[in-house]
Image (cartoon, rainbow, N blue to C red; front, side, top):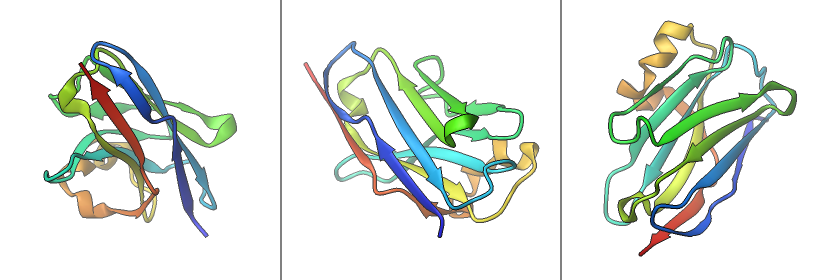
Amino acid sequence: QVRLVESGGGSVQAGGSLRLSCTIYGVTYNSSCVAWFRQASGKDREGLGVIATTGGRRSYVDSVRGRFTISQDNTKNTIYLQMKFLELEDTAMYYCAITAGPLTTGYCLNALRVPQLFSIWGQGTQVTVSS
């Protein structure tokens, strides 16, 4: 059974940093396409970035590019979201998600345009940024 487990959320002051983790169980890690999303209270879910686990290429949405970085540790089947210069507007529940099947790198890097491709989700981890 495929399962994603996020961790690393918490409270941080504006301008600070956090690193979220997403550990993936029960799926062939190679050729996976994994994304980070967030949902703030009262707002729609927002895709943040995606990584193709084979090769490690990544793409980000404009709102977080340069502040957020996705990385991976293949030995631990874990994807990370390093967040820097956090702003009040970054307060949200953060989720990782994976596509049901493998995608080529090209499709993966554009997969946030079709968020329904990400059919398996973690439980989320809360990030709260305060002034």
